[in-house]
Length: 254
Image (cartoon, rainbow, N blue to C red; front, side, top):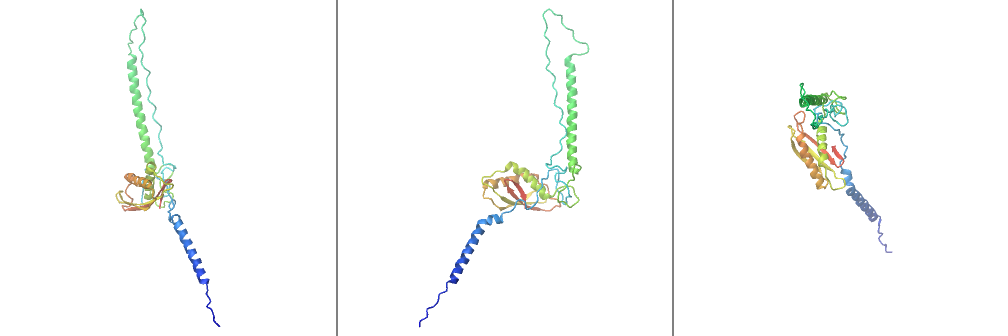
C-alpha cells in the first residue's frame, strides 16, 4: 500500500494570524504615536507672577502676586481732580448816553482771576505729588510683602519673599505671547527649551517639538526674543534651563 504524506496546514494559519495582529498593532502605533508622545500642558503647575515679585532662590509659601490678588495689579491711589476752567470773560456792553463806570479801587476782576488760577495750579501740583507718592508707596508695599498676602509661591518651602525663577520667566513669556500670537493650523503645539545665562541673557533656545505651522513657530520665536529683555539674572548666579509648551490657549511649563 502507498501511503500519501499528510499536509498539516495549522502552522500556516497561525502565521497568518500572527502577521495580521502585528500589522494591526503597528498601524495603531503609527496612527496614535502623536497622541502618545504629545506633551501635556499641565505637566507642571503654572502661576502668574507680576513684575514686582522678583525671583529668589528659595521662595517662601505665599502669593505669587505679592498682595494676594489674582490679577497682580498694583493698587491705584485716587485720581487727581480734574482741572477747573474759569468761565470766559465777557466785556459788558455800554448803552449810549449811560455814564461810564469807574474802576474799583480794590482791584480788577482780571487780577482776581489770575490769582485764582495760580492757587488752582499749586493745588494740582500738590495733588499730583501725593498721587505719585501713594503709587510709589503701593509698589514698595508689594515688594515688601506687606499687602493682604505674603509674597511667595503656593508651593514655596523657603524663607525668601519672591517667586521662583521658572514661574517668573513663564509670566514674562505669557505677557508677550498675548501680543505676538498668530497661527494658521487648528491646534499647533510647540515645545521650546530655553537656556538663560548668569547675567539674564538668553544663551540659546531649542525647539524640541515642532507643530509644522511656520506662522505659529515664528510667533513663538518672536515672543522669546521680545520677552528676553525683561529676564533678570537667575538667583544663585547659575545658568537656568527650562522647557515651555506653547499653545494658542497659553503657555505651560515642562
